[in-house]
Length: 179
Image 1 (tube, helix red, strand yellow):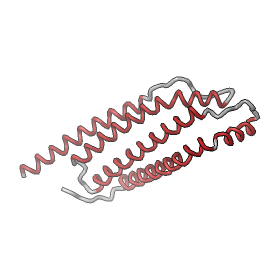
Image 2 (image 1 turned 60 degrees about the vertical axis):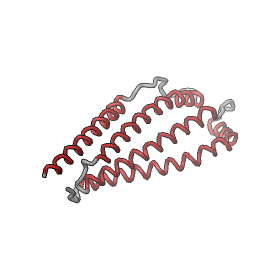
Image 3 (image 1 turned 90 degrees about the vertical axis):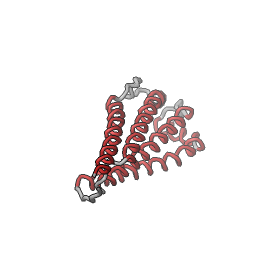
Image 4 (image 1 turned 120 degrees about the vertical axis):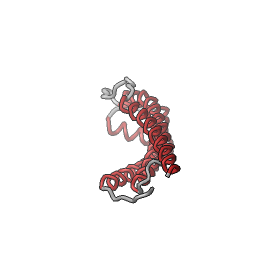
């Protein structure tokens, strides 16, 4: 049964998801451009930073910056996919038919995506700290790589919601089969 609704919450949610996806696309393109430029113009960037800070010994830690940018690019790409799946779910909800097997699969994909983002963030933290400590005499960054509990909760919630949607789709199919 498909009933199209124009719920203000869904319209707002859809707009937010589309904006999020666009922002990830822009960030991804920016990182794709910046990655090779950072490698090609490392000497010029270092010279400009030395001039700006007045620190003649300052060196651009390229062996740490490029992998960090690569990890950031991977995170941005994953978040783009996350928003794509979320947008598809919002569309099925606005069409009045959210309990479909495809949404259960999308939620499962979203859970795996968020788990990958959490793991990449853990890998990025020590690199970011080291870069910060090399670039400044005093760093405000923390060396600890604390696990973000909210991210873990989101992953678990998404896996549970995937199961709920899978079960809901099966129940709906059973109900339609009995009518």
